[in-house]
Image (cartoon, rainbow, N blue to C red; front, side, top):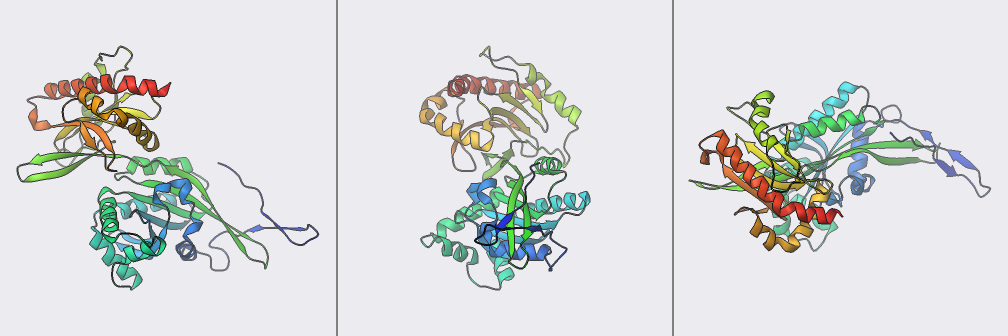
Length: 391
């Protein structure tokens, strides 16, 4: 964890300096969580958004104390591209308080992800006391040429996909940072970015207060891959996360049973003699390493959705960059991949994924054999190209 030196203020023309005094929140001058909330809501530029996830910038204040089914969110911002940032302000007194605030902001994200745009508009109007399309009007103040229909569609899509930035802002965020970030990652069920922001205050006597925000932890956005299944009652959008959560009768299978199901796939051999075998990853998927940093193939099985499949994925920044390069020869790649592998990611960027219904297979062995064939074709088509990119 980095440490920070004192802040000096030049006092006069003779070169004299005044050393700032650290002014912790919650102790003096009524600077509590509500004070911090209002400070950030009124000065969104204080939040170092570019350092956490620039795709959520610039921040447009929406409201404070936004009511959700999980409780009120301290401060909410939106970008002209329709992405929401939820901020929870906390003073750090003990580890229990830290665990609770993480659980709280996760609950907020889950609650808001179930909203439509109309739900958001109604609740923001209730929080602000203003009528009309408040989110759009707020964003248009920053971007006057913003198209209302496009903004509403983009915001509705971000809500549906859980594309949020979750920020916890407080004073003295020091201990247990690694454990806090790990807890967020383990519990992430939505496609959000997360950041911890320490807001340091320094008092220069009677001359004023300096506010210095610092990003002390952040996580990558968890990518989601979507597949389209045609049911007898029409198309239904199903979703598979990279973590591959499953449900069977409302409960996930035991880890030992799940590992046993995937064990045969971890022993398959590929046409490419340099390709390593798949590695089992909880929950309910295997990962195939690719010869490019931060990139891999995933084979998954989702009992709750009744689907299985293979998709190309990776860390957010690397995956987007690599996909851009792969898509320069997209037609040739699709010709080498299984039929139907032409897929679009939740961001709208063309991707590569293949899926099937579990009901299409007469046995688990048949399902595993299909997954092995799909993985082999994906490796044959993508591995040489990724290897060339990595050199």
